Length: 221
Image (cartoon, rainbow, N blue to C red; front, top):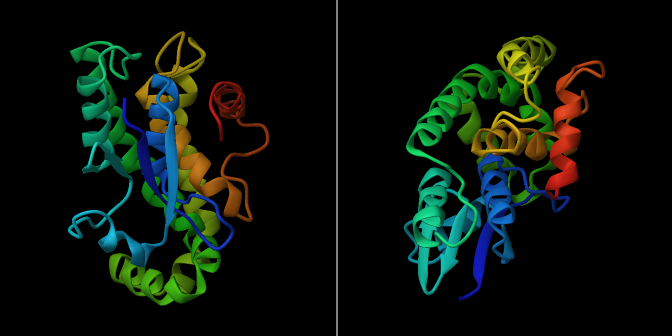
C-alpha cells in the first residue's frame, strides 16, 4: 500500500486549525492507516497537486489527490474495505450526515464567531490580510465587531450542544459503545479551536468534558 500524504492547515504556532482536517486525521487513525503530514498555509493550498484545489484536507495517494472531508471519508471506506469502517451501515452513514448538518448549522457558526479573532491573531503574519478580508466578507462586518460579541456567541454555542449532552447520557460516544464519524465531526472542531482560544469552549462543569477526555484517550489530539 502506498503512503498517504495529508495536507493540513497550520497556523503560526504549528497547530492545525481546520476542523475538517481533524476529522480526516481521526478517520485515518480509526482505520489504522499511516500517513505523512504536510503542513500548508492558506496561500499554499492552490499550489497543491493539480493546482485546482481550494480547501483542505487534501489526501495524496498513488499520484491522485482527493479533497473535501466527506468525499475523503467515503473514498477511504470504499477504497480500503479491509480496514475498520467509518460508517457501519447505510443508516449510520445517513445519521452521520444528519449530525454534520445539525452541528454545522447550530453549533459551528456561533463557536467559530466566538473565537475567530483568536484564530486571526495566530494566523501566519503574511496570511492575516487574506484571513481578515475573506472572513469579514463572510460576516459582513469587521473581525473586531464579531469579537466584541464573542462571549454571547460562546453562550449560544454551548447552549446548542444540549442534544449531545442528552445523547451522551445513555452511551459513552455518539456512535454508541464505540466512537463513530459523528464523534469525529464534533471532536474535530474542539481539537482545532481549543488550543488557540482564550476562553474555554466548554464550561469546566460541562458533562461533555468527560466525552472529550474519552476521545483523547483513544485518538491523538
